[in-house]
Amino acid sequence: MATTYWTEIETYSREGFELDSRQLEAFRTHDFATAMQGELARVFRDYDNIHLRYVALCAYFAETKARQYIREPLRTFTAGSQSQVDKLVETYRRSRVNVRLLEAQQRAWAQNAVVLSIDPTTDPLRTRIASWIPGDVIVEGDPLIDDIRDATRVTIRVPIKRDHDGSTDMVSFGERVYTPTEAYVEAPGGEREGVYNESGTNPLGYIPLVCVRLTTPRSGWFFPRLPLDLLSVQIGTILGISDVENIVRLKTPGREVVTGPNARYAVSRMHAGPEGVKGIEGEGLDYSATMLDPRIDRYLESIAYTHKQFAQARSLNPEGLWASTGITGAAKEVERDAEIQDQYRQETLWREAEQDLVEVMADIARIGPQALGVSSPRVEVDFRYVEPRQNDLQQVQAQALRFALGLENPSDIVSERERVDESTATERYLRNLESWRGLLETWRSVQDVQAPPGLDSIAASTIG
Image 1 (cartoon, rainbow, N blue to C red):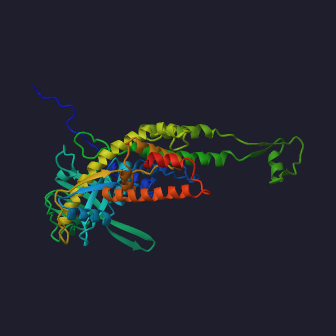
Image 2 (cartoon, helix red, strand yellow; image 1 turned 45 degrees about the vertical axis):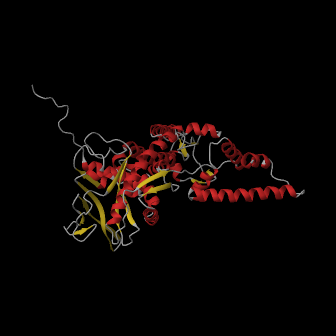
Image 3 (cartoon, one colour; image 1 turned 90 degrees about the vertical axis):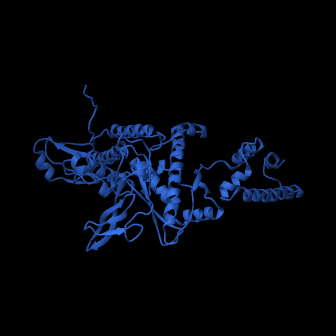
């Protein structure tokens, strides 16, 4: 009995994938001239009179969703000894890891995936971290792998030279190739330069890259499909807003009409100015002024509806692109429920990515110009977020209540805010508390000075 296969071969256009990926990246970086090449010709036959109006929807989406690295997270390293931990902390600081991860996360949201490369530098405590879009990366190997480090070959399209010729700037691209035994950059002419050494070998025995995928790819493929919903809404918004403005410009201005016998001849002899039409001569002539009322409100409603549907499907506040309908803080939190749930999903994903990153960084550091020995590193990440401004008195009262109920530890808050360890935070907290007690006693001892309302009750809840 012959075996039946549902599908023997699946194909996907690599060229189309690359073009769409680079177009998304152009939109994300506000490079509208590159991003919109060819789009107008497919939509408008005669678009010379269309004044294009760009709307940075893709950039807004990526920046809004990438929240984990706006504030630098708190990281706790484990690396065998305190000396090794200190080296890792300094390496992260000098390598500007938080800045690079913020950029990588924004790229990932615009692409559904991102690849990170880590290169050694002449400074043993600094690595060079770069992020790459899927359209510039080819991953080869077992179709079931989910870790790019297990691939047999990875090729990245990288810029290798920048030139200026008259009025034209040019960037030449080559290929960076990784295998378990090789790591080199190859120019279009075939010249090679090693990534880690002059011979172009890879001393690590695996491909030292990190890949973050925000969604699951189809079975057998390494990268997930691109977010074409984002791309289509971005292009549609630009074309729609531009078309609306063109309609208003062409159809809204008033029209003056003269009718009757020999109207054409009469009009040729008339004088028209801002104050009106003068010199209408002739029998049977009639003058009228009309103004069209194009229903652009329906057009705008259609654009707004598309935005809201996209936002709801992508765990964004549906009112985020327009105006929030929530009045109270609680109502706004309900609006943001989908965002908050997605935020927690992203935390899990990026914690795993950071563990992969610290492992690769430690290995790269060991093969640098001055070997940095860090064995079996681990990193625990506590993400922090920019919180909306609240009423200071209400915030202090709520915090005092959480302290009294044992829901929060004051030292933990000091540790997070000032980025110090727990023992140092406790010392600072006790020192601040003593100063606080002294301030209260000063207020109580001076009859003419009154403490702010509610201060005594807050202090009683906090320090007893």
